[in-house]
Image (cartoon, rainbow, N blue to C red; front, side):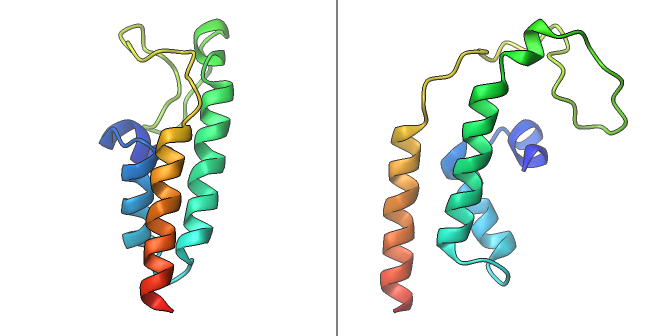
Length: 98
């Protein structure tokens, strides 16, 4: 999921839509919703650590390090608006499939 967030610049709703396409054969929309919400909750809670901890060795291209030119905020509000839109989409998808 981090691979989608950083290079593609996806937020919660866009990531949910992308993962629905990628994981539709494995997971239900509710399961994808749960995974996206959990990921962004943990991302929001832990984002500040990238600015206060020392850089570590990175063994893959994706890196949570701020690279000194990363202008994203490190304190995020909750994603309640985005999570509500995701919930609406899940309800819509589940009502269509039922």
